[in-house]
Image (cartoon, rainbow, N blue to C red):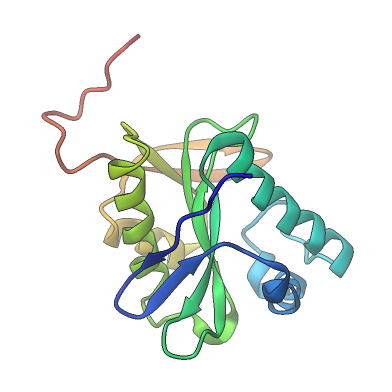
Length: 180
């Protein structure tokens, strides 16, 4: 098994998703407001939430990166998930986030996203990271902008009109992407 690193920010601990997070994770995925912009937009029952959790953990083993559980440092309360994904069929390494409804609009997605991007640049040595944000998800558009994402294109992603935001390492010389 791969060792999933723990990251810390001023207010958050980004830690491996575990079974102790499952009840909160399943509740988040059962909430239509949480799943509106993810996958097919439908809430998940506990069985499919378990499959989602297992997939996210498996992503670490297969790709060396994945999603973290977001916990408040002071209390350990689960507030959501954030991390990197690059499953089969994705256009590039993606930064994504999802927060429980009561923890939205507190800057947690931006705070976690900055830590995840730092991990992508300094540990994975990524040349670029993207966020795929469905058209209409203005809150996530704003988070991507605060993180320095550049809206580079729109695409049809699995049947949904989607904004593509690109992030580049702070140390790069230019915005040109090298061709291999």
